[in-house]
Amino acid sequence: MKTIFAITFILLLPVGCWSQADLSHVPQINETKEQRDERMQWFRDAKFGLFIHWGPSSVTHTEISWGRDAKRPMDIHNGESPSEQVERYGHDFYIPADLYDNLYKYFNPVKFDADRWVKTARDAGMQYIVFTAKHHDGFSNYHTGLSDYSIANTPFKRDIVKELTDACHKVGMKVGLYYSTRDWYHPAYLVGDNEVYDAFYRGQVQELLTNYGEVDVIWFDHVGGRDWSKWKFDELFAMMYEHNPNLIVNNRGARFCGPSTPEDKGPASPEIEKMTQGDFVTPEGRIGKMDLAQDWESCIHVGKGWSYRGEGGFKTSEECIKMLVSCTTGGGNLLLNFGPRPDGTFTDAETEVAMAMGQWLKTYGDAIYGTRGGPYSNGQWGGSCHKGNKLYLHVFEWPADGLALGALPAKVLSARTLTDKKVNVSQDDEGLTVKLESSDQDTPVTVVELTLDQTFAPGTLVEKRP
Picture 1 (cartoon, rainbow, N blue to C red):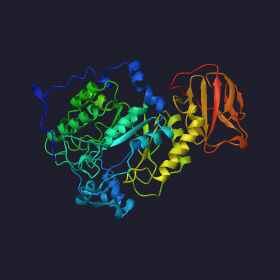
Picture 2: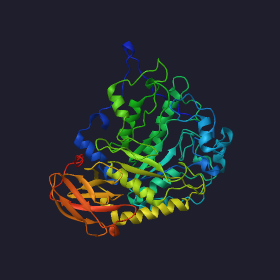
Picture 3: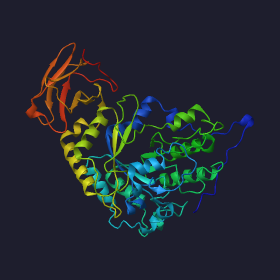
Picture 4: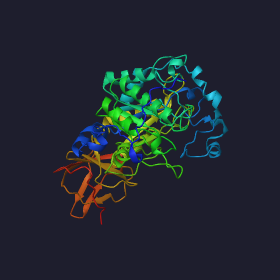
């Protein structure tokens, strides 16, 4: 394996202080609320993205990274123990490390077509794509100059990241690249002072931000169990924002970074801790709790796992539509994960979900894109979102006597469903009641559009009806 040789050493100052990279241009530290709103607007408006986990593990239908049966490097918060995972996934879930690490020699996705992937995402109504440039297993899906363990040395040889980012740029699709700082293949990961690995991964992130045109999102996935002094997060963020001042970063850039032992150190400064919290939080495998105060994105897989695990066990399109609605009304985004086959095609079930959601969004997209969650709290009944003077109620379940909601800070001028059915609304100082004939209710969700006499600010919450 090639490793990076040019290592930037920390300059030790008196009393154990250390020099810090210039962070004056890093937005998480210095931008105003107005600047942040402008930088985050496309993400907040998008609501729906495609996550793709893919690599040589698809050859054996094994979960990416987690299916590699080997002792993990010193790392905390690995989740379940191997015995617990065997119980949950079955013994067939794991394959020996020496086999897993050589799967790249058989990875030849001859049917991979980046334009088709992007078209499927667009047909589904997705607004951005996040692709696994490198997962925990250390395999790079792009032509890196820092490691031989990459797509360049497979029978396929072609640079998947380049082809996919080029396809996105051609049609204006926003691009996100997933990068796992955690690496269970690299021999220097968390070894000694971690200086070699820290420089290696920052070098790879720099490759991704300089060789593939505009990158809109860097989606990190976990550092692992070592103290903060083992990582030069200041140099990482300074470098990233030198390349792209408008970059959006998730909250996992320093996730699970110590302390794992009493002598481990915490963040070098409060501003570095704030910086590494990134721009949005990432509830995984579940719909995030309603939160209108911070940006968030739920990442959820459609199949049995993150990567290709066969042709069964997929969520239905109705389930996925309801997940999108719940994320939107809760104030977040949905990043829906597909795991392509080893030949480079999406499964039939994933394609069917994509097409069904795209059809649904042709009718209901106005009640999703560009909206902000609230003002009503989500519940079993459904949830709400708003845009301009329109308030959208996404109703999963209708009480027999109608939907009773809290009093709005605006007058309802008109009401209809987005399929143009008549809606009866009564409004007073105590609340709002919405009724709809059962024959006019839609599956899996009915969307009611209320036109108001005024707008209200994002983050507004209405108390429950007395």
